[in-house]
Length: 101
Image (cartoon, rainbow, N blue to C red; front, side, top):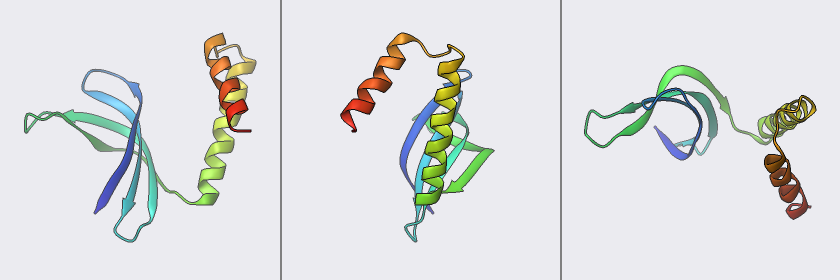
């Protein structure tokens, strides 16, 4: 049994399908990070996003969190070098760096 702690939508393919990041905890207080597809389940009329089997789940430890942060920084560096990041997003990153230093 998992407890969902955070669900972060990343990309919406359609109104009923998206890619998301889920952070969850099991009954032994082990944390997991899941990156994968989800679909909108309207069966009970409530409209709940449920994960599909398409995706990857990683144990969330200090080591994996550090490696994911390094990968994200590398991705942002690549995107900035290729001119894929607009000026507004660059300013958001700079503001975040100043406030966290």
